[in-house]
Amino acid sequence: MYVFTTKLKINSSIIIVALLPFFIFTCCTTVYAQNATPSGSLTTQSQKDPGANEALMKAIAAGDLEAVKKSVEKGADVNADFIQAGLGVIGSNNFKPVMKAASLGKAEILSYLIEKGADAGSKDSKGYSAWEYAAAGCHKAVLEILKAKKIEPAENSQKAIEELQLIKCKSEMDKILITLEMYDMDIGVKPTTTVGDLVKGKYLKQAGRCPLCPDTDYTIIINANGKPRYDVKCQKHGSMNELGGYNKK
Ligand SMILES: [Zn+2]
Image (cartoon, rainbow, N blue to C red; front, side, top):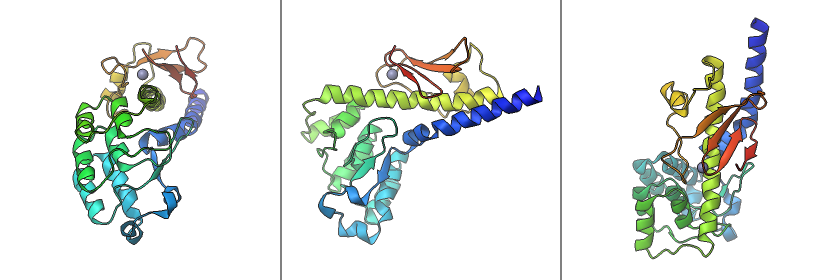
């Protein structure tokens, strides 16, 4: 019995390590890249403090307006370019602070960045602007700010929004699958286990929501043959298993 338990734990650890890159993607979707700045146009301000741009992105991700202000005061470039890491999913270059704020629905931060000279209509290498990033997350307050700035959706906006929503949904499913492994080791996953149980047990901070069907919980499915052991299912986007396998249905 002891041997069996140990083996199970080792297997689970390997799976967690294997899924780590996806998890990292969900946590920090941007990587600071000086080389991605067109024609070396990093401002003199950011050369004074190269870490400031990175600090700015971190502050936006945390939704911390005061920290955003501090990093801008320290010399962060509100139009800095970033590479959006694409580990197994689609990434882009020229990803901007306004896009990060828009994708997370941080309206106040977006307003501040615009006030400080950020170009709200700039596009990344995929042709997406803050508009597509906000629309993919159904962030109405952000869209209102962009509308007021006369920012228009891109020509292929709908396609872009669907693509971004799928990426977001997959990363939510990934997060649930990783915590499910830990939950299984400690408590054991049962056919009745829900995402709510993972939140209650503090394995997940909050139940992730699919941007397409935000009122529906993700479903956990235990596979009868045990390989892979579980799937997490979204009603619109299909399901994903703990080995990263994705099924559209
Ligand atoms: Zn979904």
